[in-house]
Amino acid sequence: MISHRRLYLVVAALLCGSETLANADLPRAISVTADANCPSAQDVNAELHPLLPSVTLGVAGQGIAVTLREDGPHYQVSIESNHRDFVDEKLQCAERAKTVAVFILLTLQPPLIPIPSAEKPPKVVAPIAPPPRHKQFPYVDVELSTGFEVAPRSGSNGTLWTGIASIRGVVSANHVAAVVGVSGAFPTLVGQVADASVRINRLPLDVSLRGWWRKSRIELSGDLGLTTTVTWVRGLNLVGSATQTRLDTGIRLAAGLRIWLTKRISLSLSIDSTILPKPYQLVVNPEGVVGSLPELWLGASAGLIVRLR
Image (tube, rainbow, N blue to C red; front, side):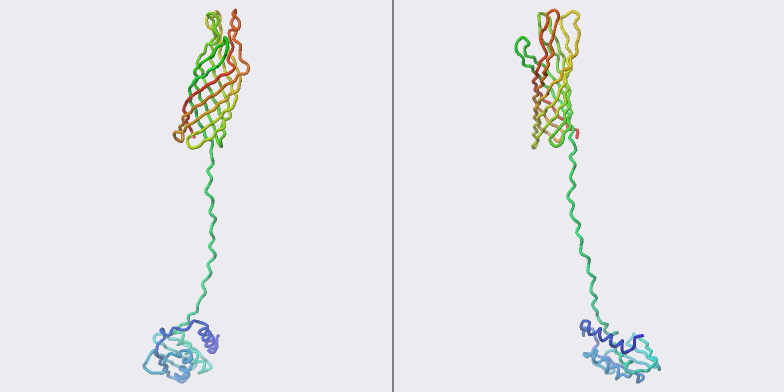
């Protein structure tokens, strides 16, 4: 148990280490009355004076009334509505006076002991993640076009003209595309001797690699690939003539211009050439060779492109 003297010293130390008491909150006077002499009112006033130098002490009927009551080892302190009982078996009146003075002081003016605020942890700022990069999925286009082809030849073979319609599928990304196409050419007459002639029907199939460049709505492209042409050959005005099927392989070159009207619709213009290094000789009995299939086809076409995604 803490003795009266130690309690007094602890409170005095707290008061000396705390902020100065606000005099505006203290009463102007304190009147102490006692029904016994242990402690007496004079002893309590003597202890209060150094603690409350600005307060008038001992004037009856003025300020705060403090009443002391003693019953042997027990004594009670009353400050208006506040009451406190103490026990002192040794009847040490001086220690009792200090205890009463401390109780009066703490009741009228509790010490303000500053409590340091807990330091807030540093605010962790999460790094700003860069915006997600959208994956560039391949574009898928369908090209529909129609135009003409010409096979420039000299001599008796003569130059051939024909119409052609094409459909191609294009898968592209990062300025490179794969192109697969099929075309259908109108029937063409080749080589004519007397009343005999040969009619050919062509179905070109091609697979190409495309490089392309686009700025705003304008796109330029170039194709290089292989072509396989299915050719049906039939003699006309001949007895017992039959249809023969040929399969010729060659090289396809093309250049294109596209004008994008919307994100998914474009107009297209293109020129292309097909080179067949081993042309087929056309033989009609008994006349003999009446011509040959062209080695080179040049074409131009216009059409529409629809982007599926």
